[in-house]
Amino acid sequence: MPYATLCDQITIATPAPAVWNALVDRDKSRIWAGADFATDWQPGSSLVLTPLIVGKKSADKGEVLRAIAPDILSYRVLPRVSGLPDLPENYSLITIRLAETAGQTRLEVTHSVPASPVRRGKNFEIGPDSGRNHVAFYWRSTLPLLRDLVENRDTMALRIARHAARQ
Image (cartoon, rainbow, N blue to C red; front, side, top):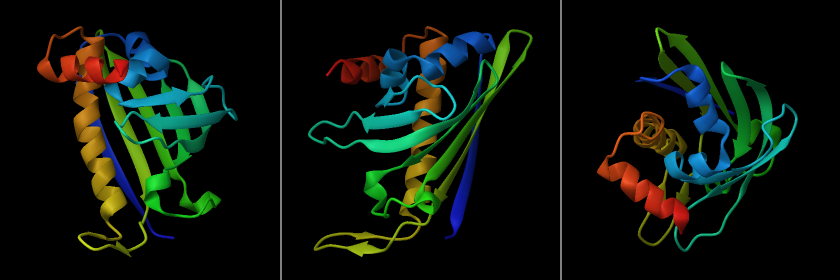
């Protein structure tokens, strides 16, 4: 199965342990990621990722692959929205690397996502690039929220994310 691999990055003006904490803290991830990550973040542990979308109740299953604080976090997940069957080759792979220099942390995320099946409805068509496009949008949206949360910025986007996480 063909995969698209996307990479994104952001620099956060705090030490790596603070960024790591925001990645693995369940309450904080609800804010910046817009999802509940139910796991203990131990390699081999199961992961249940529930997007916090109003009116939608779905959970994506996955597994923690690596968790080396405060340097690397890697997991795989099968998003139900992908429409793909639950087979190992259909899982997305997410790897987050942190590198601290002079009190600032560079976060790099690599997300490999399989091609989506083509689906058509009355007023829509989902093509093979839909997963890649969604992942690119997701990280462009969430990494600034993560930075704002960890740096204790008071932004409108973060206020909205905090409110949504409480719902």
